[in-house]
Length: 405
Image (tube, rainbow, N blue to C red; front, side, top):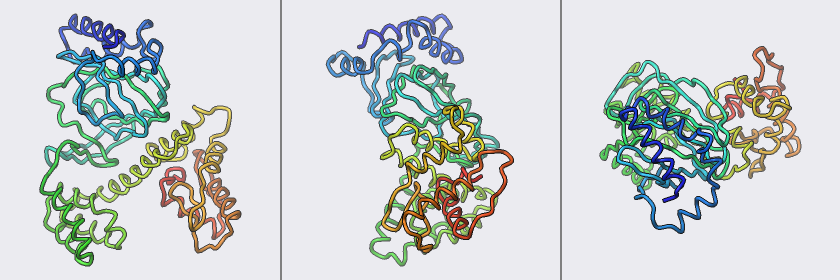
């Protein structure tokens, strides 16, 4: 066991005992322990040295089989709490809450931290809720920051890691009673228990994959027939699993209408939720080949902020020496790529039917973006050419949509 973490763990155990192991007191104890002038992991434990110690020393606490982290290491273990080290190479967390309390410390790298609240919550089953997820605040966490964690709905958050690797140290309780399930949130309207598996729904979706292969003409009609009969939870998971094939076959609107006719007002927010889920999943996947921390910061803003003015505010905070609009346009120049059919800016494709040469496409993309992004409260709507109007529509139908709002 690394002597640094053994000392840190013993200090936390002693301070918590003095508070009679109060769960309410634990987040502050954990946060204070890692903020102590003599203790911050980011200042007292070189990353390479810590990795070397773990690789060469067999005397380590029992390790978990958790898939959380890339990887997760257990650095200290106590019957009531433990210390984990989470490495993040490409991953980013979903919007989630916790069944434990404590604190996390940014040991290496940086992240965009978003906090949310879930209002008007209504339980549909023990594993699914509908409500209104709203962003409370978003901030940049640099190396050395320590953030408390409260269990349950008091702490709904996500982290978008900007550097590879990003490393966090977490001091956390084993489990806080009464806080299950640890919901994941699909904005703007759903909370889902990620640990619940309905075996029947899973097998049915697998069979639909088989049916699409052997009788593709019958697959969509079978899905629609199922949506007419299924309960809300199973119907939602069927929609979510089959969303791509329904869209590709032009049957998406029929499927959504069927689901909404079955479940009425309860299903009103499902189209927006699934569309946003699809958008966020695409942005998350971009992390696999976009490594520049500035570009990852841009992705984090696109994922978590819904309008151009607030995006500009965060950009200005991080890059105060350049207007936010100029920074966005610079990132666009760096991220626009060639495809088989023309230029693309992330998932926004230059309209092929306009028939513009590649060089003209580049200038038109940038000019349209400059005219369309809303970085000021009272920005006037510019007059666009017919070509720019079609390009703006392509931007609005992509993950770049928040810039235009």
